[in-house]
Image 1 (cartoon, rainbow, N blue to C red):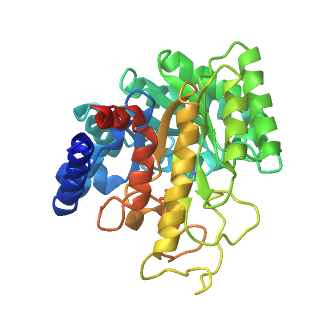
Image 2 (image 1 turned 30 degrees about the vertical axis):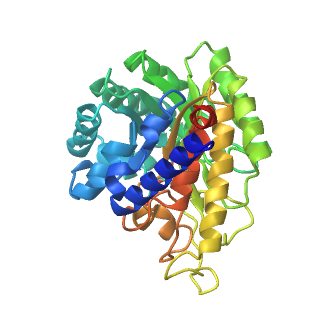
Image 3 (image 1 turned 135 degrees about the horizontal axis):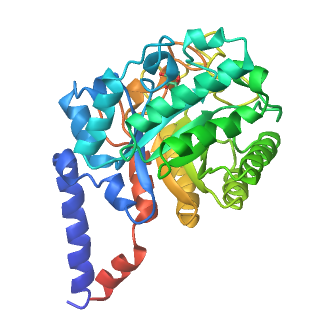
Length: 380
Ligand code: XIL
């Protein structure tokens, strides 16, 4: 039979597919090995996942991801609830979880206006604010020196119109609060990678200001190693072209680019401006929550294509990208079920509510598959 090798190849493909269907967990490819040579594949994990409460979720996290970020427990309202009181119970567990599983551990976040320790909002004096920032950053970063590989030192300091956001930090210290934060962090752990992180990072006005601020930090001789683009995106926005422009613009500053909080909402967006300002909320309605009982296949396919395009771009620029982190593990626990409208059913991640890989998962995996090896198989 002339086409015997081709026949064998097709047969093996059919067999693998059938086995996959029967024994999903065993045969499912994994993201972390698939992209091993390219960038870390991370996930934000919640308290229950840090504490390994659900064995199936735990198995998925450990088998699929090479990096972790804490979704909430490392924010100042939890780590530093009172001026003289830190709470490291959960952050210690989070770091131990990452170490046990040989993961790259990312710290989120040191200075942020949201989920901020309430007592910090009451500071009225600039010297006191500087001292508080120094003490806060030094205490936390030193505790995990050599264990946490990178930090979001400052999160979301810029508005969508390109102005610097008013916050207790900028009100008292002006733009200088950024340079102070990076300086304190680099002294506490000179080897950790230090990032500025924000949403809507493809927006030109915001991009311009972020670039100006980063250049300002660099001009002072203060270490900044990376820029985090959160990646809370929609099915059609931002365009691949806009994302690419931003990756190139940020990396031209000589810093790494990380995609830090990737999720793609499958639902209509209630506001023109696309973002992730967590204080914004809108009314729920059937129109805004069109798929309460499951995502139609046509949208599933659209989501898979969107993820495919996004990952093809990431691979094209893998030399500039250090890490791609998903904001959650599965659709059921994504924050996008409650943001910016409470109580919707969203489908933004690669694993569904039963922890099964979605079409989007396979389309992401396929972007990295070496087409040459298939060609070789056909030839032999
Ligand atoms: C979100 C969490 O996912 C939610 O559980 C929480 O209620 C609000 O914060 N930008 C960030 C993240 O930097 O910390 C936010 O996480 C999402 C937007």
